Image 1 (cartoon, rainbow, N blue to C red):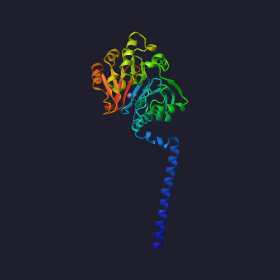
Image 2 (cartoon, helix red, strand yellow; image 1 turned 120 degrees about the vertical axis):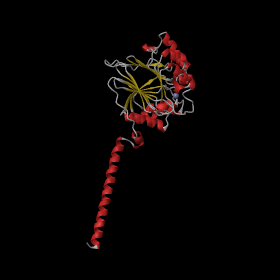
Image 3 (cartoon, protein in one colour; image 1 turned 135 degrees about the vertical axis):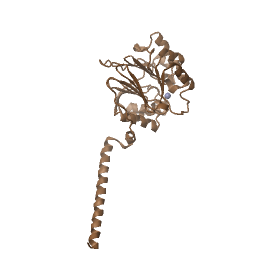
Image 4 (cartoon, protein in one colour; image 1 turned 120 degrees about the horizontal axis):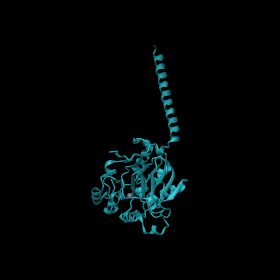
Length: 333
Ligand SMILES: [Zn+2]
């Protein structure tokens, strides 16, 4: 073969390689454009490293206490398939990403209920983002009165005003129970007094947190928000004389989601003695600057509760209540 022919052959080969590279790039760009129209680039990070969460079995109620560092985020799956997200972490990128990945890992694009227990940033921080990317049936929130109490709540409230979903201010007696024939369950707000009612003015800050009672068959759980022992004493006293709303009975609780990340003023011995909890869950960050959970609270829990779980040492903790009364707990670490 002559030198000229050899050169032509090489050039032809080079041209072919260039065309192939061009075609591959073109296909990638088109594929990425189509993908982006379904999943916007700003959300791509929410679809990496999705946790593997098993599917809920028929008749199960599951409570997922998601590890969001210092803060709170609890996802409840009810036996009829409805979902409720309570609080949305502290708004740090890592916390919001963890929540979004958890929801995406479970293929949850619609939440029946999103509940913000109170206005503190470690509870509402990431909800503005979550509400922008997930559809919601009903948002339960503290109140319009507090709209400017801090930057995080202001941001949450601004997003909330743009949504066309149902909106409900947290108030005692709010009831989202289901009378489903096969798997009935009760979910009732034990606290706080609704804004505008005379009693509501006596409570401020953490004591305005929603306290949510969940009852499924023989199993009960209490999500305490960040209320102090002042509110717990009141709930205990009201329970003792049958004054809690709508049949709430807190005298035999399977799961206590401990108030205020295990802070010193968040749990009293009287309350623990009254509710007789089997299990306690503390949501807090490792080595957090607040010293949560406090040594005193841990001592009280060790003396009064059989099993204690912590998101800072065990990661995400999932409590599963079966229709047959079985209880199982799984941790991600
Ligand atoms: Zn908190």
